[in-house]
Length: 110
Image (tube, rainbow, N blue to C red; front, top):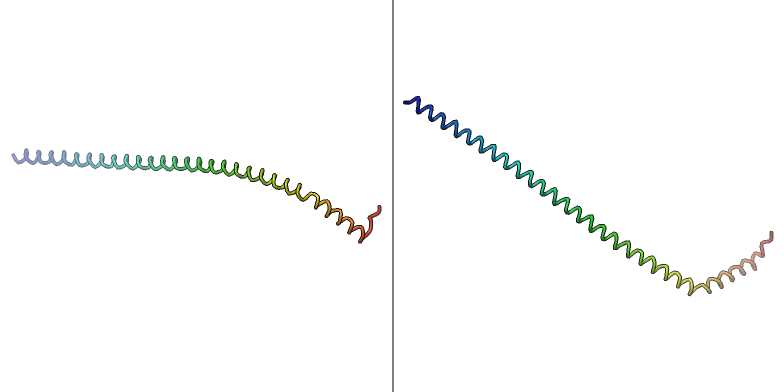
């Protein structure tokens, strides 16, 4: 009777050890799957944030391009107005300067 009881205890212990080993393996598998899932979600979140960042950068660049074009156009208009407003003064100054040079140093003869 003691052999049957001993064999039965050993059988139960072996079954319990197998169940514990199976539980540990399953727990390890669940932990691995959870870590992989979390890493994948982090990766996807980073990719989504990077796509959003690039989209925002593109929008800001397009807006800056538009504003710079407007600024250049405005500068051209202002430059044309300045030339128109001061064109006569430039001609008068150039004429006066030429006369001063000629009167001081004479004409250049070739």
